[in-house]
Length: 407
Length: 189
Picture 1 (cartoon, each protein chain N blue to C red):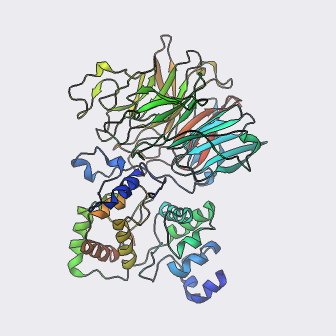
Picture 2: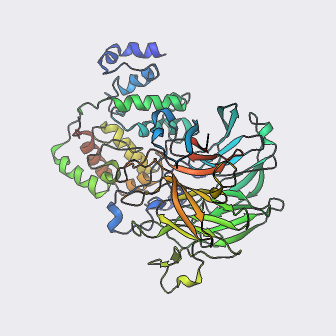
């Protein structure tokens, strides 16, 4: 086969491409995917993605006291020692399951009266970024398949063999955004992203989409398209419409295009990639002879390169009433920008007309916006707990924080 | 095993600026008590970014990076061990390099380091940062082996960047670059 190394800052599949083509006389000198779309003048740019601390970092070595939340709220370290912690899912018995993108592990964090134990539940997976818990079953989305582990919470020390829900999701070992977010829709189907195979490239038929699979039949279908890469989505608690975050292209400029928040009005909607970005900006290459009018614009522009990852509607009872059905989004933070931004958890609220607006909610990860690196931590996902508190994962350090109110 | 290892180089430990942690005793046999290697084929760890060291140990443990000496060393290390070792060696001062760059390679090496964008990630003084290693003053033979490995596609690479970059290098370029980098004294030393 080909060398597989999930330990990438951005896109390891270059190695796959390299090995596949290595039989040719001249091995290709293809740069990593994160450099794709960079102009000639940008070739000496010092901007680069930041690698995670693959061995994790102890919270006691980090300036966690710099974290800030609005008055009345409190933030604390919930658990550390969860290297690469990304997507979170909550079990019926309170187990917090944690997926990883750049490692191969899925963890189970068990809370025993305030003392938390981290178990490495599953090992050797291919970018197990997406996880869902439903009716006793843990679903895991790897780059190429979705699997299920039934009755998982009763077998945390001896997990069952994976049962395949669907395989063959990555038939060409695509470069670019191959890791998957996973969520269970109100229709009982599993929704996942298939990202664009590069920064700014023409995607294949099922790429740059959010797709869904019926776990009963294994039949997939494209749900929406023109989505460069979405690694966070959730359904509005009242309208049941799907909302999702999207990462816009790099190497265009510091301030364009914005990363975006979208609402799906109907199946089949096209959100513009690679032709039109942020609903109003044609791509200099792919946007020629096109119009942004043919695509669905975003609900909200989030800022350039802020890297919105996990998002959830707040449905808990702990936070003040005005937070009900707001959206929390984890901004992992920019790398492809001279002056860095993001690196926070942002709150999106809605006015009487349903118009969204955003404000920072959890800040303090960004230390020096012009430094390399600019931050000491990076929020990757958010999850509402049963008591209404909000967990925030930080994949850079392998730490999960807890935000609570009024105690 | 630690005691046996120490007895080979009893003097080294005494030269260290700080007491060598127990966990590092096995490392210093080859890498030097203060992380300054005396072996041309063994990399110096002194002054390397901590994240670089912990990531390489992780890659050895995971089997992505392979080496007859290092792979068995890393297999039993926990994440906490790796972090402790990384922090210790990152704290050590890098010694002035014993390697002397050939006069004709000083300017030529710098030119290549800029032409091939080495300075873009490893930094203008090639001191490394984050997960990217310091190259200044690194052992000559080690640098050659790594660059050759990247060129051949056999050296574990994080995202393909080094493998890609090394494709452009000729054998002669590798020789000149290694000679230049190995003799570089960092400004902070």
